Image (tube, rainbow, N blue to C red; front, top):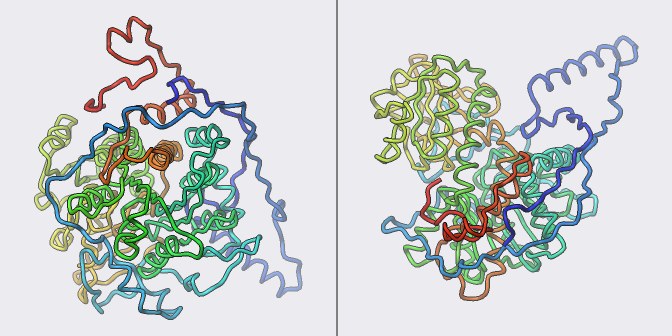
Length: 588
């Protein structure tokens, strides 16, 4: 394993211009769209008068200047850790097998919908409901006007049709966004350059089911650089950046995802990553457990031959432990979510920034003086509470865990029961990973204009299906923003239909994603190259040395210089000079 003074040379690139309409991880803004509409209206008027339409300077071409990719020689150090073979799997003591957060993929495969019907259909988690009412609900902010891309056969520049994205023609914009993300992701790029010659994933055939955006595209392409073959689908129907998916497809990566998938589309896309001609996967990289669920249910023979599963979300890890508890997990799995580096940085620091951005983009709200309740004080909840408090909000916390509740109290937050505070708060944020945290009864009692959103992975925290009744009316406000109107005129603002608001309505910091992506890549390398017998059919935590290695890859971005132990100091502390520096039980 590499020591903590590994160098990664940052190359200062030339100034990069923002491509028009790229959104840097979001869809085109309304101001950009309205400007295009005004220009078109003006040009049409000019043509009717016999005049030449006016064009702006520089509209004929758009040039982007990126940073140099030249690197000095960097050695690849072994990432397999000594002592990993003595790690014990973490097991749950109770809990039943949860089949899925969403409907079974087999249930939807027998139906075919018309283009018009697909464009109107909404995806709704069946884990919290059985059917959708025929009440006042007609459409929501996430409904797509265009038909499903499954109806169209597209080709990339090499003639391949092994992908399904919204529009392959958007690939140039997606490529520019990926290049922007690469500059802010030093760790995963360092790993790419260090390992590209050794190709530690040569022979790996990876099924991926994660969010598809510019940052995860950097991870996907890194895995390809390291020798892996991949097929990818989205773990969330609203978080996909269509232009980025197009860029991956143009690069020859089989990707099946687009923003605004229906429930049937969602399962179809995952199935396409598993079942393909001349393709048998041997690894899974999952975010939420849906690819693992499909593999277990529909392809058990293939699942038994896997080298391992890597999971990064609370929900997915919980489902892995349930599989292990019921003796249905027949391959080793790596729990990336509970690794120190992921928990502290992705869950805490990322959400601390993205919650404010998400709420501002969707509602234009003024935070000062607003009363907010955050359900859950784990790492995600902590990040949300910190940023909201700094913005001048009065923040309340709900918790079931006395330790987390005590932490919140010591941090200055009042612990309350949701039903006691629900009538007076302006914003409700869920961050528990549980189901039905916010119920219809809670929403009936909310004040007019209350904003409701979810920061947890699962889309079951807010009981959205209970809002699809004949007595309530849904009104689309803007993308991912709906007004739910009660008979008396009260309005509730629902963001992203209860799915992860930061990935559906905003973006997450690329630097933090680099930390998670490097952790995922190293976990895949570890499981794929581990000798037979090192890992059994159980759920494992990341080795501490691997966490420290990921951290070291990112320190150069801050020009940080680590202090090195002397031989005497290392002997006194009983440590190796190269780590690990903390025992496994240490709480950072």
